Image 1 (cartoon, rainbow, N blue to C red):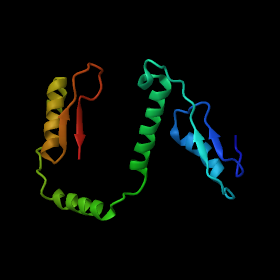
Image 2 (image 1 turned 135 degrees about the horizontal axis):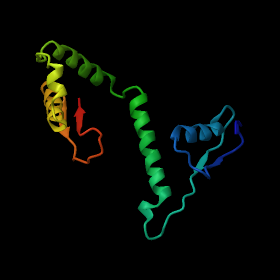
Image 3 (image 1 turned 90 degrees about the horizontal axis):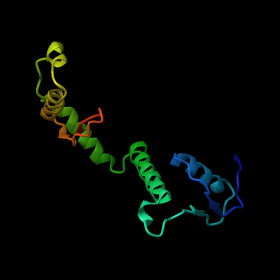
Length: 149
């Protein structure tokens, strides 16, 4: 509901949203202009006594915390700007020293088996500065490698 609740000091989220930004927006409504009280936020959870860490509400809360942390690290400016500027500058200066490849013929790629192509793509990425590693084979039809820079 679109209310500005400057006199409220307790927020109770009775039903969790899958998107943590929606919850945060709801909570932020009590922090509008005129709020001068300490605000308490509650998330009631049903927790199974025998399996407290694996109850649905605990898992959902963990997922939402992870999504919140991810959005903060991806969308907020860096904390150590000088270090990040140095890293970026170093990467740009490395660009001229990276190895060059003869282009692979598209016909060669088309006839590669899936595992051969994955090995080729990961090894090629590793030679230009990426940290490349394979993931366990899961037969899910998805990515079977991870690249980190």
